[in-house]
Image (cartoon, rainbow, N blue to C red; front, side, top):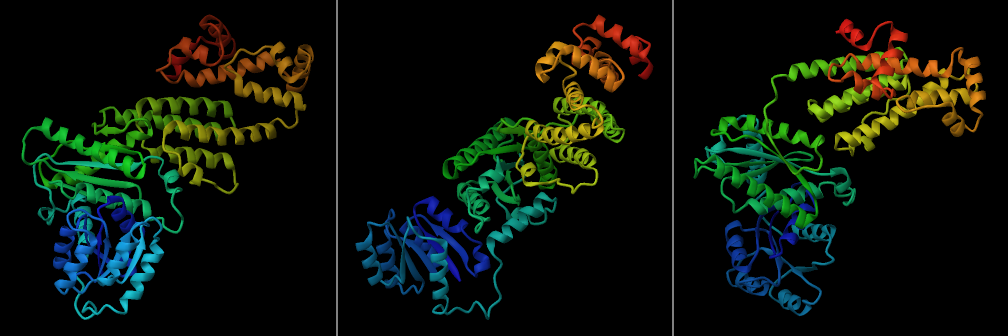
Length: 511
């Protein structure tokens, strides 16, 4: 069944098109019109089976369209779209041959489908006996997918031309939260709405094509053959980008983020441009408040950065294997700072590292990676916070198990020291926190742990300092502060006592 939608309100057109997968229902939308004159030309050209026709439109209203259809012998069934106050017009429309009507403010997609299904029995076409023509929209999408994959044979069937070619990709921010606005019965409504709105926005634009690539990834392909000026073409690309952003915000209240490739000059470069635009978009993981990301080439020292990351990951895993949780925590913090500073891992790679560490901490429990909570996280800081909460929960349980033979008071104090070693800690402060005499804490700690509390604290601080000294990016005075010493001199004295050499000498020895 071939269907035409005639309505001067873009949101009505988009809403009807987006509410269902029409192809699966045996209905093909073969055209849309925004006024009566355009509708009549389209009906004559496409010969549809059914027309959804708005009553109040510019140029020619729905009643005039119905009159001319009747005069010209057009056989399409007409369903009228009206507002609540258009009942008199609806009565006239029914007299002119309309088969049914919907009130736009309350119509539902189920109601539309019911009427269309009832009309199928009355519609006689030769569609079943003749070969089906390929759906134009599906064919266009297939062609654009091929072009972005590097297959250029049919590139000239698109609106694109060679010269100043760009690929823009965009995603919906907070996609899974946005999807919750829509019912589970119509999960395709949002992507269909975006695609239909994009088609409407760009239909009259020359040298632009748009296609949906993944669940939350759209590609806009732009050429600007009329000018050789890179500046001029780049300005046009940005104008298109902001038009898309503002339109999606205005019509369906969603925020978007964009990645843009470099300029290319032949169709054969589209696959490279697509990779560049996706690589640019990946930076949203580290800079979630930015709207646009432009492609930049990877630095030459990329391999060196990955080696450093590998060293951190190995150290974190060793810390967990050897149950040296302070070593794990130090390297986790150093890894996170390094990755965030250099932005050298993709979102997917960062998540895999976190998942691997979490798996190691679970020790035989049912693995809970890739859950819904993590799926909704879109930036590095949120992901770090999420996993720190998981890690802290597991580590507290492990430390409680490790220290279970200790008095409950000493066990709690050890956990506190393990977590807050970088802060200033005194017996008086611990007494205030744990509601016990400082002298009693000191005496009981030595009795239970077989060493003094501050000896234990210094061992933790020096052990973590040794890990930090492996990273030449940190100055020694910075490391002293990071592990809880008020001065570099005091740090050097304590370090020498426990290690037998100065921090500077230790760094040279391990370097």
